[in-house]
Length: 395
Image 1: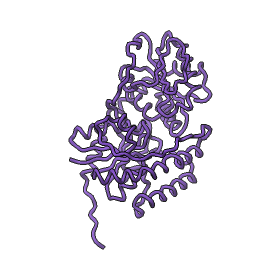
Image 2: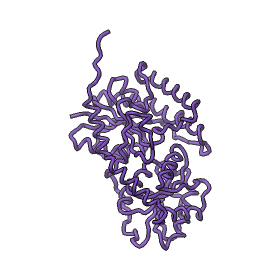
Image 3: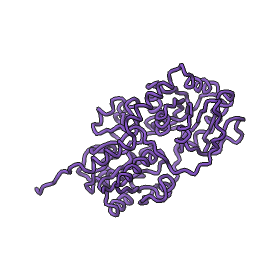
Image 4: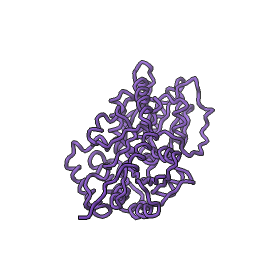
């Protein structure tokens, strides 16, 4: 029996892909535990899971909405990922001491997991919850890449093995990427340890009371969601989306996810919910998804063969949206400028059976499913656990 410790940041989209992997390992008889924000993990992975609590930054993150490009990237690292690594490191240290894992599986942006594991000589595997990093988004920004490399070196000196080399975002033991070649192209050539497993689709704990009886088989179903972290930026877009769906009401049944409660007077015929069981809805036959280009929503939609209208906001979303458009499985609109007429046209385009978007999404979905998801990820992790380790000899 092998012990696997999963180290994750307090970000829903980074945790969800690993839930199925943990379940698969447990079914194979292995011991699994989590290290991260205890309250959030209890809600996402179940009360019976073994969880080691890690501190997270206490200050509420206020990201200036006008930040874009390199400035947004620097902010994300300086104000989010690096402080997170600093405060998580003691909790990861305690988790390793108590659980004694054979392998650490650490999210690409939970750097404490990689660094503390390497200091203890424990093999770790990177979990890449977004395809953005594996396609080298800094290839055209060498100064930003050098700046980040310097920060990672300083972080390693404080928490990792000072003699280690390599980027802690990319484990030498293996990188799990929950995507496929249709989106990331030749990324495996840049990262020899990259394992494309496709989305990890598995049941999640849910207490949803979604009114499935409202779904209308006589109309196409369109889901609009901006994910779990964009409520601050989405008010205008959700209002535009509701108007676009209302204009298609005779042909389309619209569902808008509105966690911030900004749609106080939605148009008739548009169902507004604070949360939805997204995987269940996709499985029941959603015909199109309008979203921000978040990696999980994109890949879960494509796994089900559902085409997308993409309105990227920030971070990795423009890159992911570009990958989907290049694959022919969706169209892109401008988040801050699209109006109801343009969004209506985009929705109609991906719903058009002769437009090719559904066929492209179906093709990507077949490829994703063939990659193996959670099973393939568990295969890689067990292989790492059983691989011979180098034996050090006295000098």
